[in-house]
Structures are given as C-alpha cells and as structure tokens.
Image 1 (spheres, rainbow, N blue to C red):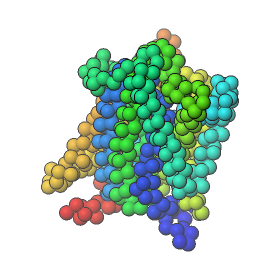
Image 2 (image 1 turned 45 degrees about the vertical axis):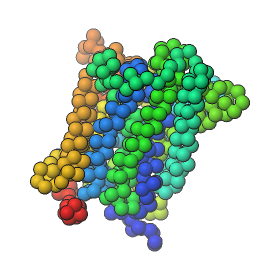
Image 3 (image 1 turned 120 degrees about the horizontal axis):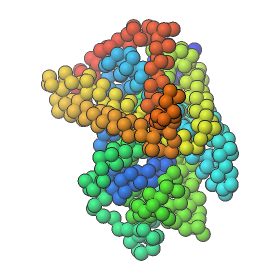
Image 4 (image 1 turned 90 degrees about the vertical axis):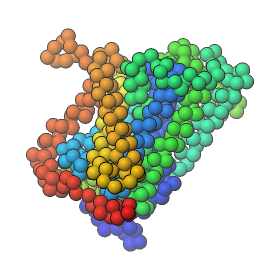
Length: 521
C-alpha cells in the first residue's frame, strides 16, 4: 500500500509518512546521532593519526570545510524540493534520471557498508560492557550479537520515527557528556603531570597543514575524516516528517556540522595530548589500537579501580549507545531513499509501502535490515580484514554522493546567482557548494588511485584473467560496490523504463521553485 491514508488526527506526507513529527531540536539530534561521534572517533581517529601524525587536529578542521559547504547545498535544494530521496531526486532533476539513480544507489551502498561495521562495534562493546571479554574476542559470538543488534534497531525504526527520535535524545546526551568528561579529564592529567608515556602539551604546530608529510597523506587523512563527519544528511532525509520541511531540515544539517566540529576538535586535541602519536603503547598510531582507540584510552584516562572503573565502563556504554544511535539513523535515511526511488518508479513498488499505523516505510526498512545482515555475515565469513577495509572504502561512496549533491545545487542555482539572486544565492547556493563538490571529487579520484595499490589496507585480490595482477581490497569494495549499481540500473530500466525515460521526474522541473523564488524577493 503506497501512500495510504493517514489514521484520524494524523497528518501524512505525499508518500504516506507521518508529517510534522520532528522539530528543529529533534532534527539536529537525529543528524548528530547519525554521525555517531563516539563510534566514529573510536573507529577512525587512530587511522587519521597513522596517516598524518600530530596534524590530526587540523585534518578534523579541514574535513569540516567541504562538509559545511555541502550542507549549504543540501539546504538550498531542500528549500525548493523537500523530497526524502534527496540526492536521488535532486540529481535526477538537474542531471537526468540515470545520474539521480546512481546518487541514490551510492547512499544505499554507503549505509549498508557502515552497518556491518556498526554491528561489529555493537557486538564487541556489548560483551565488554558485561565483562564477557572472551565472547568479545570471538568472531562467531560477535557476529551473532551484531545480527541481533541490527534486527533490534530495524524493529525500532519500523515502529515509528518519533520513538526513534526520543531514543536518540537520550543516547546522544550520554554520548556528548561522556566525550566532554573524557576530554577534560585527559587534559587535566596532562597539565598536572599525571599523563602517560608519550603525553604532550597542546601545540600550535598541530594546526599547521603544511607540516603534513605529503599530499597523499593529506588526501587519505581527509578521506578518513570525511567518514567521521558523514551522516548529518539524515536530517534532510527525514524532511517529509519534519515541521516546516523546506526550512528546518537544512538548518539542522548546517548546525549539526558545527556541533560536530566542536566535538571532534576537543576530543582529538585532548586524546592526542594524553596518548601521544606514537606507534607503541597507548600511542594513537599504534596499529593494535587503531580500530578502537576509545576503549584503551578510557582505561588509561579514568583508571581501572573505583569511580574510574565506573567511568571506563560508562565510556564503553557510550560507544555502544553511539553505535545504537547510528544504526537507527542509518536505517532511516536508507529506507527513505529507497521509498522515494520506489515512489518514483526507480526500483520495485513494494519498497514504497507504508505501514498504516506507524507511518513508516515497511519493505524499505526491513529490506535495509536484511541487506545489512547479509552483507555483515558475508564479510565476516570471508575475513575480518575485509570488514576492516570496508570502513576505508566508505569515503569513496560518501565523497561521490555528497559531491553530486553539491554540484547539483551549484548547477541549478548558477543562473540565478549571476542574475540578481543576491549574495546569499551567490555564496551559499553556488560558490560554496561548488567548491565543496570539487574538493570531494578530487578526494574521490585521488583516493581511488591510492586504494588501487594492493599494499593499501589489509587485503588484496587476484584478477582471474591475470594471476600476477593484484588489486587493493579497499578499491574493490569502494569502487566495485558503486559500479555494481550500473548493471542493476540497466536491468531495472529494461523491466520498468518510465522513470529512466524522464516520464516520472522531468529534468529541470522543480515542484517548489516558484514558491521559493517568491520568498527570496
């Protein structure tokens, strides 16, 4: 049942979703929780330090710049077309149906890949929280816990977006408070002389990008940091369920990126000051810690006895809650992207079905959960190294669809920017989104080139037609998953061609363009 009638007293969007369910605060919370600051830092901070050393703080600052620029692009396009398909819909209106479809596919790819990593983190931290360290080290039991975790989070998203939003507020509050406590305690210990071997005072040189050893290190560090910021666009994906849907989601996207900058800046500086950037012991560049820097850092900062032990456990709970929040808010945008693609006849109509009571996507939500479980189980069966490489490959899918959105915004607003649109249109709708897109596409191209190298990452693959030709596992996962969308797109086009002929979304047609132009006057 697509776009079924709403129950009495319940407003519904054009696709049947529950309208006006979220306000600005809820949208900011969902955007920030989707990024999962604690989980993202735990999984990626060590990788960034390993790539750029003590320049990790400036990498966090530089990665924020294209994110903010692209957020302005999302804000601009959402004002004239608040469709939950976001990049899929906007790409089709600006560049045509095939480009839009591939943008939607990139969103789905990125979300399915990250769900496998979220499940892994959730499984490990869940066992650590109850002291079951043997189970946490077991691949099999962690896999079982991860599958259960995805199923539970899928159920919560299925039941309704308001329940998800209320859970996000509680989880994000715990997360941000604990990150602040960790940072302040770490800096206090450093400056009181109670740090660890390798501790150092904060230095202005950490914020000098010219101290980074090479352009390659800069690019790879930024690609990793982009993953740390990724996810704020969830606020825009739930636009059809938001009050003042043409304005509130865009504002939430921009404000959440600023909140993330403050959070990441504080944690990165304090963690680096306390643990140092060494490759042994507690050093952030120690490869033994790179997959999870917060777990070991918490024990070193808070201690392992008394109240310190309690805080260390609370930190574990925080990363678990971060994974929980991000799992929910990863399912939501993917389900709504699939819903929009189905509603516009880009994928099977079953994915456009809406639950008559909960007003949430049914097949799209369940399908996202099942696809994530299948991908997670497949990767763990192949190798834990493949799972580790998948996190590095995420930057490519993110850079692609974020860059496409920024370019679509600049392309659409270009005529108005140079024909009396005013400084706001020129800067926030054309120049900055265009610059953000160019930066991200540069990262995509250079990152793909680097990832091709078999020595990058943990895995490499032999080409069947040439046993002596190897390809990097990070490249194969990142680029391969995006390219997989091309034959799938043409296969569905042969079955149901209306969308691909431009009969459903007409290039250059915008539903609220006239209204937005009147408001700008």
